[in-house]
Length: 630
Ligand code: WT7
Image (cartoon, rainbow, N blue to C red; front, side, top):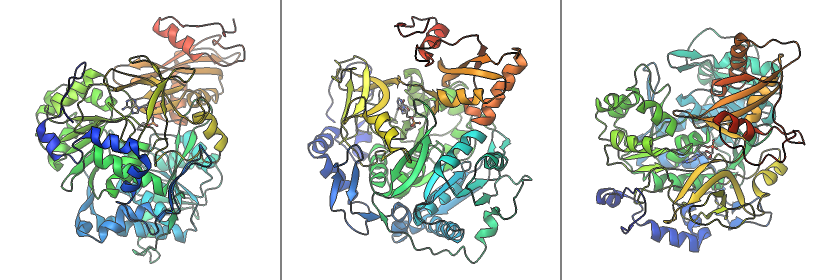
């Protein structure tokens, strides 16, 4: 990109960075892609393998139910594994893994392919067929990757539930997806302790019907309950003759479902976001290649969890589609000491680190010395995702971790988008706190309530105006909700739920959610989930949850509780309620504050006005109160 005088604080890429990058001129690529976005994506799709070519790139006859690569036949696991096994990448490492306790695993493409086939044969032998849903509930261990790929191989739809979720969150997701098989680990190591995943799953299964078989992966080795006839050890199944290492794959239609992933929305239960084999692979493959500028010799580390979309797209599918070597780490960043991450970057020679602002702020707190002890000169690129990154954390990441030579890719996207939507590339000048510009071929706008584009630097609703290949296809089992949630405020335009502004250079600054989604440490939680967990406790009549800004976590959860008649408020009860939310939803949802109140501010139609609670908590003007009940 030609140098130009941008406004504000700008970091221009060095000639060295540009000379190595796949994309050297963002303007040129972007211009080409916006003139013909279908042609742009079609060319990208041709870089992957298809058993049968598509007849048409996009079918928009049933908008907003867009379809991509119509008639194309493929299977994402074929492009992740089989394709590479046929080339010199066969012996290349696909995955390097370190356990929190120091365990180690390294898997070539050849081996990952075989392990995937074995797992796929196990699933088949248990009666899993194309289109069935399989719930996966594990920590960050290689088997989660194998399990996901095995489902994809046989056309089963995986539904991964993050290992940090707990009983009710898991129950709800198993039930809603009507899964018939659960893959779980006995436990997960986290900060030196064991998260009892199987125990949590047992409790969830007491509440949920439908699961016929449970495959249990041994990780932590503590005593667990194994229900006869239902639960089976993976390592035992794996050594049976049925676990053959050859497994024919299902030829999938481009639009056949690949996975569902639950995410929190404005109201009610979490939504099952559906992604498909064809478009999703084109989107994740292309964006990762261009933005993290993958080269054959790279060792890439996305420090997210496979249980979230970042892990699906950029730990599992994107890197494997690109034939990259990925690193995965099981545990906490500061265990046993705050240098754990830096130590591993040095040990493994990591070139690309992709993480979240909350992790950066958390590690920054321990001071520069922990970082400086290590040789991090292998790092070439850094990344950030999950919430806006504050300029202070950006600069620390850039100077202390990246030694002022690694551009930071601040990628804005969502579970629903499947891939990066607003993001720099290494050749793009950076401004701390801005994701810069839309990815080529993506049309973004910022609108006011009437649907007009707002003026430069004015805040408005962030929307996406043209379809993209890895877009959400529907809310699984609830197509009406899909239309209502995303496409109804401005007909024909995708509503992100975020607010943003655009500056004089066309750079986009995402401000935050405009709905009842709370981002805690980058994790997406709905007020409704926290509130219903509180109300499920027998001393609670009503509850409201809001997000309050926090220096490290981005936001923390504050809750307001009306107790049932006859229940006495006490500090013990507060602690009990916090534990109850952690037990039902997960430790990430634990409220930082619980206040007992007599009344909640409501509209005349009975909706809780959370912004009034928030304004009161922050001591700011609550704005228009005309709809308040009293
Ligand atoms: C929401 C989506 C997709 C990756 C993980 C989160 C916020 C995400 C950024 C960023 C500012 C960001 C938005 C978005 N968000 N990345 N780089 N800058 N905000 O996926 O759980 O579906 O959450 O995360 O608010 O809507 P998700």
